[in-house]
Amino acid sequence: MKLFKKAAALTAGVVLSVVLTAQAAFGASYTVQRNDSLYIIGQMFNTSYTVIKSDNKLSGDTIYPGQKLYVRARSHTVKSGETLSIIAGKYGISLAQLRKANNKWDDMIYPGQQLNIPGMAAGTNSSTNSSKAVISYTEAELDLLARLVRAEAESEPYAAKVGVAAVIVNRIKSDLFPNTISSVIYEISSNGYYQFTPVKNGMIKKPASQQDRNAALEALKGNDPSNGALFYFDDSATNKWLWSKPVKAWIGRMVFVY
Image: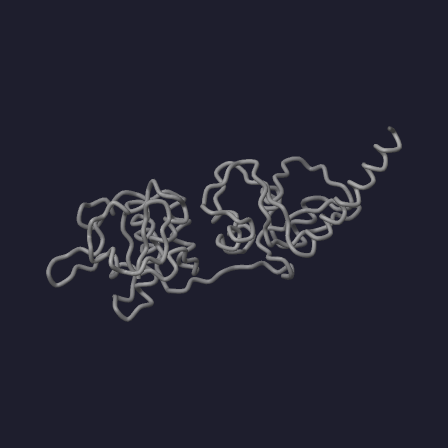
């Protein structure tokens, strides 16, 4: 019996070694933490939330604490004498970022241990990845966009919030609409129709949360879960003209059309 257990343990060790080697080369395993979303995880590892969904064969956006997700991230093999601070410095990231990416809140590491490196897709070098905005904006316009996100999608999934902001970005990039955040949001048609209800009812004046601001920033940096949509509406809407348009995405109760 002891011989069998020893052989089984040896086999398990070989399998684990293979798995860790594969992760170092092609990706890593991330344990979902409280308040995580696919978008937040994607941002952490510099990848798209749609890629995470596809890689893990997820049919929706719902994830739960403790869930294991495959992410296309670079991993680091701990060497003798290294500490978490040394490793974080090597890759130009903060100690807090390294801890969160590995759900590692103590300082105990050992040679050969694999650590996920946030902000780096597999195969990238150690320089810091930063995304530039796809349109120009002022701090006041960022706040305005975040307030629109709050007013339109306060109780919706994070991806829907990013989608709302992305629609504004898409309009700015289109020849069919004004070319600034404020002019798009405050646009009123010749017949007096407000493009966005929160402007008309005053909800646009309510302050945005940090999550709303983060969603706005993601859209400004090019993340677009709306898939290029120019309009959005709640799925309870009865406007036939809106429903007649091609649906590009449906997140929570928010429908995005072109």
